[in-house]
Length: 76
Ligand code: HEM
Image (cartoon, rainbow, N blue to C red; front, top):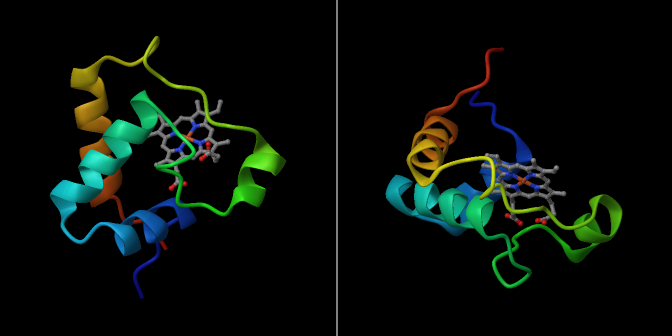
Protein backbone atom coordinates (compact mmCIF):
# COMPACT_ATOMS: atom_id res chain seq x y z
CA UNK A 1 0.00 0.00 0.00
CA UNK A 2 1.13 3.50 -0.75
CA UNK A 3 2.24 5.30 2.36
CA UNK A 4 2.40 9.06 2.49
CA UNK A 5 2.36 11.60 5.26
CA UNK A 6 -0.81 13.50 6.15
CA UNK A 7 0.36 16.58 4.30
CA UNK A 8 0.40 14.81 1.04
CA UNK A 9 -2.86 13.01 1.42
CA UNK A 10 -4.49 16.39 1.94
CA UNK A 11 -2.67 18.00 -0.94
CA UNK A 12 -3.37 15.04 -3.20
CA UNK A 13 -7.05 15.16 -2.26
CA UNK A 14 -7.30 18.86 -3.03
CA UNK A 15 -5.19 19.03 -6.19
CA UNK A 16 -5.88 16.65 -9.04
CA UNK A 17 -2.71 16.85 -11.09
CA UNK A 18 0.85 16.54 -9.87
CA UNK A 19 1.55 19.95 -11.38
CA UNK A 20 -1.21 21.44 -9.18
CA UNK A 21 0.15 19.61 -6.12
CA UNK A 22 3.63 21.01 -6.76
CA UNK A 23 2.15 24.46 -7.20
CA UNK A 24 0.19 24.21 -3.95
CA UNK A 25 3.25 23.20 -1.91
CA UNK A 26 5.38 25.83 -3.62
CA UNK A 27 2.84 28.61 -2.95
CA UNK A 28 2.09 27.52 0.60
CA UNK A 29 5.72 27.25 1.69
CA UNK A 30 6.62 30.65 0.27
CA UNK A 31 3.45 32.36 1.48
CA UNK A 32 1.31 30.34 3.88
CA UNK A 33 -2.19 31.71 4.42
CA UNK A 34 -5.30 30.69 6.27
CA UNK A 35 -7.37 30.75 3.09
CA UNK A 36 -5.03 28.24 1.47
CA UNK A 37 -4.89 26.00 4.52
CA UNK A 38 -6.31 22.51 4.06
CA UNK A 39 -5.69 21.30 7.59
CA UNK A 40 -8.46 21.85 10.12
CA UNK A 41 -8.29 25.14 12.04
CA UNK A 42 -7.37 23.20 15.19
CA UNK A 43 -3.98 22.41 13.60
CA UNK A 44 -3.15 26.09 13.63
CA UNK A 45 -4.28 26.49 17.22
CA UNK A 46 -2.11 23.57 18.26
CA UNK A 47 1.06 24.16 16.21
CA UNK A 48 0.69 27.84 15.40
CA UNK A 49 0.78 29.19 11.90
CA UNK A 50 3.51 28.10 9.53
CA UNK A 51 6.17 30.77 8.92
CA UNK A 52 7.10 31.50 5.31
CA UNK A 53 10.35 29.83 4.22
CA UNK A 54 11.00 32.74 1.80
CA UNK A 55 13.97 34.10 3.73
CA UNK A 56 15.75 30.75 3.77
CA UNK A 57 14.68 29.00 0.58
CA UNK A 58 15.01 30.42 -2.93
CA UNK A 59 12.23 29.93 -5.48
CA UNK A 60 14.57 27.65 -7.46
CA UNK A 61 15.13 25.48 -4.34
CA UNK A 62 11.41 25.52 -3.57
CA UNK A 63 10.68 24.14 -7.05
CA UNK A 64 13.05 21.24 -6.37
CA UNK A 65 11.59 20.63 -2.89
CA UNK A 66 7.97 20.59 -4.07
CA UNK A 67 8.87 18.23 -6.89
CA UNK A 68 10.63 15.95 -4.42
CA UNK A 69 7.66 15.98 -2.01
CA UNK A 70 5.10 15.19 -4.69
CA UNK A 71 7.21 12.27 -5.96
CA UNK A 72 8.12 11.06 -2.48
CA UNK A 73 7.08 7.61 -1.34
CA UNK A 74 8.00 6.65 2.20
CA UNK A 75 10.12 3.55 2.64
CA UNK A 76 8.08 0.83 4.32
C1 HEM B 1 10.34 23.85 2.60
C2 HEM B 1 9.79 23.64 3.79
C3 HEM B 1 8.32 23.49 4.04
C4 HEM B 1 7.32 23.08 3.20
C5 HEM B 1 7.43 22.60 1.76
C6 HEM B 1 6.09 23.13 3.97
C7 HEM B 1 4.82 22.82 3.47
C8 HEM B 1 3.66 22.85 4.19
C9 HEM B 1 2.35 22.52 3.67
C10 HEM B 1 2.06 22.08 2.23
C11 HEM B 1 1.46 22.64 4.69
C12 HEM B 1 0.00 22.26 4.65
C13 HEM B 1 -0.97 23.35 4.59
C14 HEM B 1 -2.37 22.78 4.49
O1 HEM B 1 -2.62 22.00 3.60
O2 HEM B 1 -3.22 23.14 5.31
C15 HEM B 1 2.20 23.03 5.87
C16 HEM B 1 1.65 23.23 7.13
C17 HEM B 1 2.35 23.61 8.24
N1 HEM B 1 3.71 23.83 8.33
FE1 HEM B 1 5.01 23.73 6.78
N2 HEM B 1 6.36 23.56 5.24
C18 HEM B 1 7.71 23.79 5.32
C19 HEM B 1 8.40 24.28 6.41
C20 HEM B 1 7.86 24.52 7.65
C21 HEM B 1 8.58 25.01 8.81
C22 HEM B 1 10.06 25.39 8.78
C23 HEM B 1 7.70 25.09 9.83
C24 HEM B 1 7.87 25.51 11.26
C25 HEM B 1 8.96 26.09 11.75
C26 HEM B 1 6.41 24.63 9.34
C27 HEM B 1 5.26 24.55 10.09
C28 HEM B 1 4.02 24.20 9.61
C29 HEM B 1 2.80 24.20 10.43
C30 HEM B 1 2.72 24.54 11.91
C31 HEM B 1 1.75 23.82 9.57
C32 HEM B 1 0.27 23.66 9.94
C33 HEM B 1 -0.40 24.98 10.17
C34 HEM B 1 -0.45 25.81 8.91
O3 HEM B 1 -0.99 25.34 7.90
O4 HEM B 1 0.04 26.93 8.93
N3 HEM B 1 6.54 24.30 8.01
N4 HEM B 1 3.53 23.14 5.54
